[in-house]
Length: 112
Image (tube, rainbow, N blue to C red; front, side):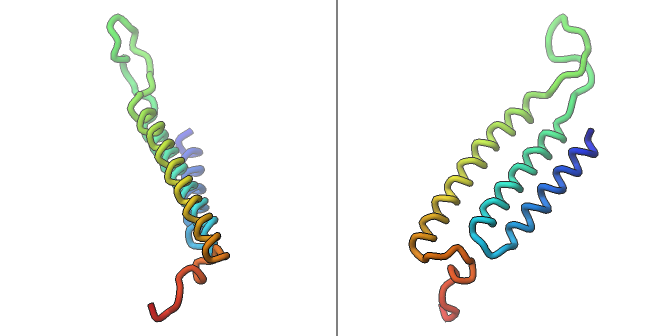
């Protein structure tokens, strides 16, 4: 299962990197969001199942899921959503102002 997740994580990172390197501002925002999702999957995969007894009194030793990676992922999802929404608002405002989402046109004159 870990090899499949590693493959999916690699696909997410490669797609996100490709989108970040394009000229369109919207694709750059989508690329950062996809890389964020890849990082969440990486954190979830690295958390894995713990071997041994759960930290409960009187319980038998069975594999259990560590709640710390899940809490970190939930927090990271909220942060990723907030930054993506902020980037989209900035891109919308830049499109309203300059009538383009091309990064070369948004750069401005070369002498500045």
